[in-house]
Length: 552
Image 1 (cartoon, rainbow, N blue to C red):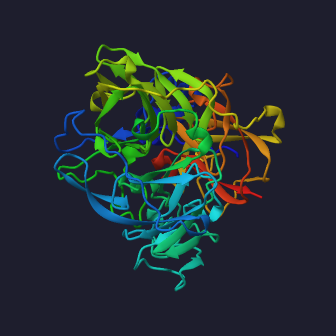
Image 2 (tube, rainbow, N blue to C red):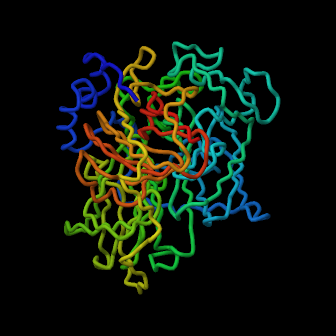
Image 3 (tube, helix red, strand yellow):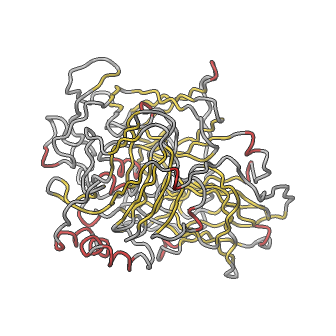
């Protein structure tokens, strides 16, 4: 994909501090910034007193039960609705939820057993559900224009059927006549392939993939960022017998941890700098937040800076960064300042071939890490703080673990974790492609571009053949976590050098640091059809940093 002319320097400085300067002055400045701690976006400040850290108990996420298991398919029902949730103590915050909770209910799936989830949209705007990391057919992948319309939302086609193809929707990318094109991000665009339903939609997932932790979230075009911020996110696991026989920590010693940042106004409502707070017509955020929206409250499983009581034993931490734009560098620190080992056993797409030990671990938006932490090294009564080395003030704290008892521990970490990782060599690739992720113009406004172009749902950007192996070289101006739908990939290099330690395994999201290039290799298998690749800084994504991938 070709690059577009650069933005004028005075315009780019409005994107925000060092990030705007990076895009304006080129990759030399960006490379220098890449050696400093990551800074992305502007931070909102909460307007009410915040609770002290390590007081709220860590919420243990509920698992959704199927409504049917007939015919070899587990069937679930989820209602999307606005619900008041207690996040800050004594305060009820209105949120958009899956199933009335934040995070949404956890789905537990078995490898090879399909599941169907019927989503019912009782929110005031259209929604789209994307299972991030799932190997799914195009019609269940959550393409941004495959909307589920709420009751009463205008249908410009005049159609009455439950499912139909539509050329556009009012208020969505300026695709319909009811929206003012001057107020939209993708003015005048239409998507002739969009599949839109009214009120409900069935998403069917084959679950034919390696065991791992996935997550589902809203993916509505131009409005993904504020929808996730308002609460539309949840976890989904794929399990299999082979992983369960490894002897890893399990049961109450396996902890899913969804980390996200938010900010609150004086009434306890969520703050978000949307240009249109109704999220109906005008996408985008105020100019100072174009690089990304950060909050000053760190939530884990929906609780601020929580505390969890643990045994003096190994625990398996399944960590997701569900923040819109905030990057973390995690460390586990004891009362006496010692760092505990973070033993990585898995990445986005499942187990590694062998464990990798870290003292600190960077994690970008949408990345997942599967870690073992051994609390047997900590005396009973001791506190272990999970901290963010990239934070400052209250955002330096994430959560804490209190060791409360000695206990037997029959778990272990085998030296060989998995033997099913794909063996992909550079010489197997049929082609090499290059994509630049950079700031630029989008319909006369600031935007974020892939290969010099903003997203157009009606344009095919890349066509690959089913089964082909390709190498992609990704180049960033500022910090961009790049996500591929459908397929996992392996990291071949960063900046012409070997991958970093945390690049091990099969991933679906790679964190590009400012001024950095990286090479990834993947086989495009699974299904034919239309998919996406994009930056998972949710504000960048909403402002054009997506591209279409056609597998033929």
